[in-house]
Length: 180
Ligand SMILES: Cc1cc2nc3c(=O)[nH]c(=O)nc-3n(C[C@H](O)[C@H](O)[C@H](O)COP(=O)(O)O)c2cc1C
Image 1: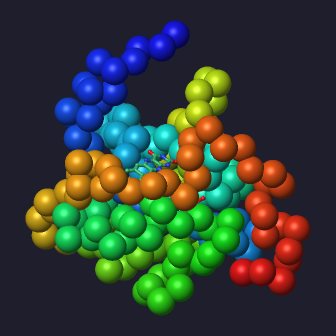
Image 2: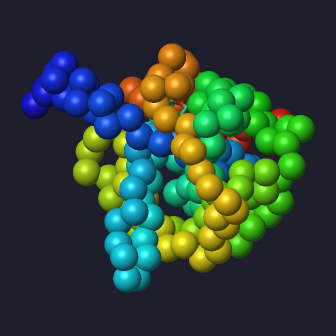
């Protein structure tokens, strides 16, 4: 059932903060800009993100044990553009960035002062174009205050993969093992 323009307008008014979600599996690493996310339990602590079925990051997250969740400050628009408009099917978005392997190999961007490394504990695909990924935080960094980068500041970006896309094969680089 379509909910149309009022739904879109209401969602835009909520103006969510933006994350970069990262994952690694099978020798590949990836990450994408995410606006669909929320705390989803207090005790135990849970944090949930929704990943587009079109994304390289989603396909990695299905095989990854852990994810990196990086909460962007409002001065991080360049990072948002990199992770929200490029696709790991074609480029290594981490090139030139400081990155280290966290639990389960999840790529961690230490220059993001607000981040968590989380264990993936559940997935729900209810048939929409995004899949619900529930995580359990295992390492949290909150270094100083955060003024979030919000959707309104990045809504003009063109996603590397429109949500309706269904790339095949599972990762383009899977067919080209030499490409990294
Ligand atoms: C403003 C904005 C919000 C986005 N929100 C999400 C989101 O909540 N979940 C998601 O999986 N992708 C989201 N995307 C799309 C991905 O960040 C984008 O398609 C990215 O280039 C995919 O990269 P990948 O193929 O390397 O994973 C968003 C993109 C933009 C520009």
